[in-house]
Length: 112
Image (cartoon, rainbow, N blue to C red; front, side, top):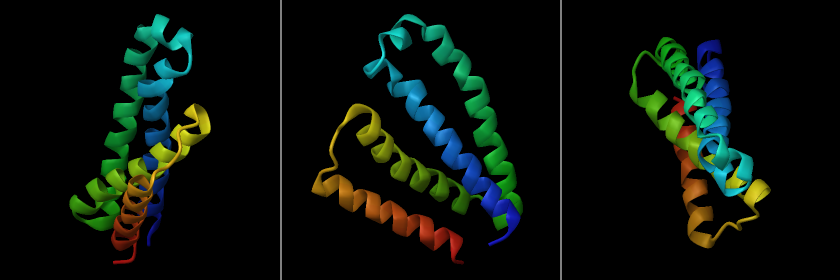
């Protein structure tokens, strides 16, 4: 695994965490509901982060599919962790299996 792939993974993790708060903050904090313009403005740096992840990922992999699959897998891993930590929602058996499968997708992409 080269440095471009490591950078890609880092950007994808951070971007997915920020996306979680952008979309789901409204479920936890009333402030979020009252300041939708902040949510909209967050879309600019989030889009840029995914853009850069694609750029570095393509440098690291030389193709686009692994980047898309890593993006999916990082979202599937970060979402349930943050949802549990912030909203207190548990992880069902089906969700746990889905997370495990996302982990397999993640590993398949980085061990090529």
